[in-house]
Image 1 (tube, rainbow, N blue to C red):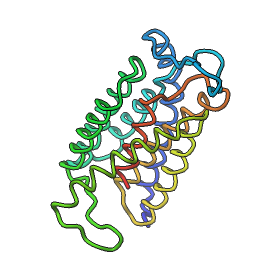
Image 2: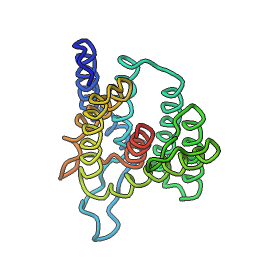
Image 3: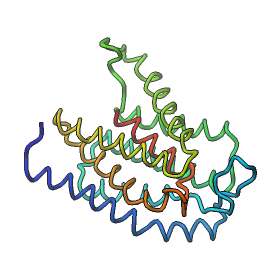
Length: 227
């Protein structure tokens, strides 16, 4: 387990800075969403909200995460691929929250983002105790990333659900990273947990803003690439 006091301080700062930034930036993102028309309009009785609610709140989560990572994490080749793929996912999410894109082009762009991360070294090399052949690890890794990206998006149906689940997941992975002495992953998970914690007060029922595809797919992508 990582016991270096300086590193523990860095992890805590990453979490606190990300949380503070997400909490501070979310109201600005809310106003931006209203201005560009990224609104969740209740169209049937299945919707919990009765009035239009801004979405695209995931932009605040992404911004807070990115700043914390750039401040406290060492940027290596693998992390560059993750951040580049995540940026593509966020841009896609913003467009979808504003324009409501069709599923096929979204799926294609998600594959591109996953391929970028995988080509930068973010690959699954072992599965159920077996070492995967290199040629097989590439498609398996892409399928995994795209699947988890969409899995988090699918659970984003209730106020605070996807953000709360992602907070718990990232905090759990943070503890595991510290136990196995995986310093880079610990910084990333601290930043992700902090970003979710800072956004969560605005997303709890009754939600003042939704994270939208911008946030749900971003959280899924980061969790998939770290795991």
